[in-house]
Length: 439
Image (cartoon, rainbow, N blue to C red; front, side, top):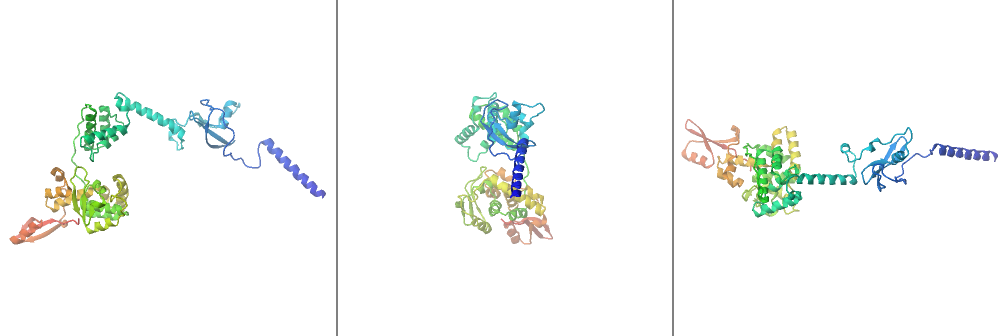
């Protein structure tokens, strides 16, 4: 019993000694961990003197222990609990624990950080941006320039509708693009400078001039239009096998069907996207929503395309319920992947419109340059639009069908079949024509 009493007294003495030592050194046996919600709140902001309330801005771990950080709601100044106490009662050799707290988070240097800024900071920045934009829009122009851009575009659309020019008109989009790129819509000189700075072709700059000219007519403004000319460019015409390779490389049934529709109808991508299920009947596709002032029309499609269309889900009124930008976003990776796998850089130059260029060019060669036939197939309003498809391709010898004739009847039959006389040797007439493409 005596030994047990001595052991218990020793243990109590040891525990008392450890408690006394921990109290004197300010340490405990348990490790320091910052409280989730420290009870100590700052009395005021060291920057603006505000008495709060403050945001809790995380914990900072230092050599002297964890420190709660705060964010002033009034001036967006970040400070720490220890910094505040040391600013009020600084020691002779003490320095602030947080040197970066001298700068508010919404200054220029903080924009390079990957730190997530809370809503309180962005609220003030947004107000500053709106104020700067308002000053920019109002600088030396008209009181109407302060109006919201959505109201201006709505007014512009209404004007185009009254003039009968609203259908498939790119003018509102161009006007909004000019505004986003810094143009003051009520300052013609600013618009001219903005158009000149853009990396557009002269043809698109000319279209921007037409769009702003209609805006000036609506607002009864006068301006001197800059001079741009529509440049003539030779369109890229791919081979049929390259188009088939792209279609086969698609992993999406909808994308492969879309490309096959472009190939067999020679239609514009916007016309195919506007197709509805009621426009599809047996082997006929009816284009009732033409774009770019094309004429409506019908196209006969193959049984292969009919099967591809029937395999698509009919959950929407439209066959392809998506936008042009989304289809292009899905098409570019397919095109790049096929170009890399097949080691053919020409595939990267193919766009949705290349299918129409290919169809018009091949049709022009197959019909021996019959402009009216090509014009009807492409549904052009003007023959001038059709002429750019004439004479674009240069065929190789293996791309022609060759036939010979020795009698007048044989010559007539070959002429009716579309053959053209190429040469004559020892009384034998040689005819040829481009091979018929599959569509």
